[in-house]
Length: 280
Image (cartoon, rainbow, N blue to C red):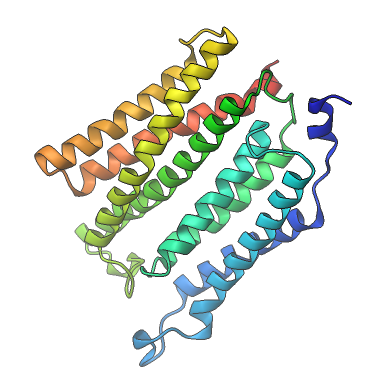
């Protein structure tokens, strides 16, 4: 049995289905918590209904972590295929949210992240498995792992930027009934947190790109392609964002749109890899 056959002969464990069910349950719980009006005096503390969505998301994260660990024991690396990388991406994004939630109250972000984690994980397993990436050396695995980690951090920053844009839109039009953060983070907090995430993700993504070009060169592949081009576009957008915020003081809407644009280019790279088996 070849390494490629081994990767695709390892079926998912029950932990995967448990994680998907818990992600779906967390989505419903977050939406219920957002729509629920706080009772008198509840704004000073969290009720069990406020804690339940996060606990459910934490349980989903643990279950998916068990699945990833079991596949690792079976010799399936998170960077061995697009399917594995996407599942790892969803898991890392949830990890970042749970860590950020220790300091910030980001319930609206959880309502966005829980269904995203469910969709990405389910889509990865419903997609054709394709083939394991040929010539996947240690350098290639490190490149894919770092690129996935950088993309996960960018995903969190983009989610915050998207919520920022929605909140700003509602506040400008005085649609206070649609404001999500009645008791949560202010616009300024979301803007700063999104920027900090970009600052963390950018060097990781930069190293991943350098290693990726070295890996492609070692394999004798063409360095100029659609996927490397889109990765470069994403890197340039985030570089412009960092420089603009540092040198010219860009904040708010313009920074949020640049963050969304940078992640969109990053997502295209993963989409290209995901569609390759379908396109032959």
